[in-house]
Image 1 (cartoon, rainbow, N blue to C red):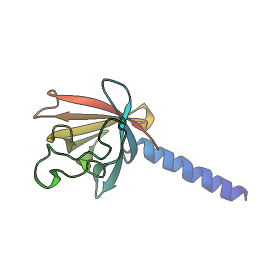
Image 2 (cartoon, rainbow, N blue to C red):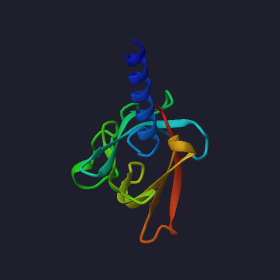
Image 3 (cartoon, rainbow, N blue to C red):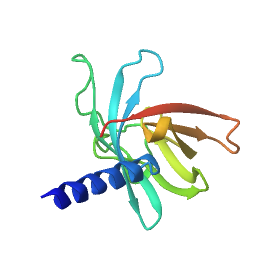
Length: 145
């Protein structure tokens, strides 16, 4: 029994340690203006690339509860935002994650993206930019899992 407890504790510690060094997991996005949670985004890793999909939107009662990306182009045009993959292609580059793309469903634009983990993996600093990262905007996402 004691060995089982030790093995379980070691597995939990290894899992928490891995979570702190990877952006994979569930993240809360926070509205820059209100400080309210806007969405939950699930980041997964496949073949060395991290991609993020919107799992849930937090909307006020007066807002459309199942909005579509009416400003998106191509295959995403008029598709539901919930379930949409908005972050693609992030690859680990040292302590950062770079070379990704991020879609802003509010304006339909796709930006270059990079990210870095802070606060022992509890926060993800996500930056979207055009050209060089100097010309962009950052958001802090908070780990939800």
